[in-house]
Image (cartoon, rainbow, N blue to C red; front, top):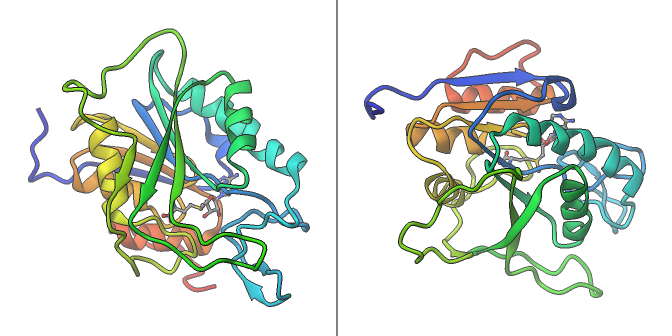
Length: 242
Ligand SMILES: C[S@@+](CC[C@H](N)C(=O)[O-])C[C@H]1O[C@@H](n2cnc3c(N)ncnc32)[C@H](O)[C@@H]1O
């Protein structure tokens, strides 16, 4: 039984998740980089956009499938071996690289179960060749060899229409706490350990902590790692600003 007055413990590592995984956990909830720019830098970083200005791009026009697989194949493999048999993975992904990410995860050994659709936000069309995004996607998969009940009354839908909270961190792709709380609630029980190997500003870990779930996060960009530490009340590490 978890005591809700005691904050759930958080373990946070700075570095490349491929070097840390596997780490034992009950559930993986993560938001991997959606693509890679032409310099091989991972998304979540600043890259030039289609105007040639410095902006966060979600980098598809210069997307590099080989680099994407180079990062995500060992990462999904490590996530698979972090989970018990039947354990759940929820991974957010970009609309344009969704198919690629699911393919990499299934090749790593995950069994694809469902697509989760998140609405309640929205953005402008990034160019005249694109539609206005009105939803975001995640996929739900399991480690084969077992099953896990997540919907006892069979009334939880795969559409999450939840208004987005905003301005929660300076990370360019911070996920809203409203969404992360719901995902944590649906896919885990209090006391279960949640792993996010692409932690960014720590949104999964903040939601987990606030809902009484121990968590483990990994982030390889030092400024983002410090944003996560700050949100989680962990000591910051030098250098303190980018
Ligand atoms: C889409 S962002 C996650 C944002 C996060 N959901 C949040 O709300 O802040 C992906 C993160 O993965 C990090 N990342 C990319 N490759 C990594 C790796 N190999 N190991 C650890 N972190 C990595 C990026 O620096 C970025 O912060």
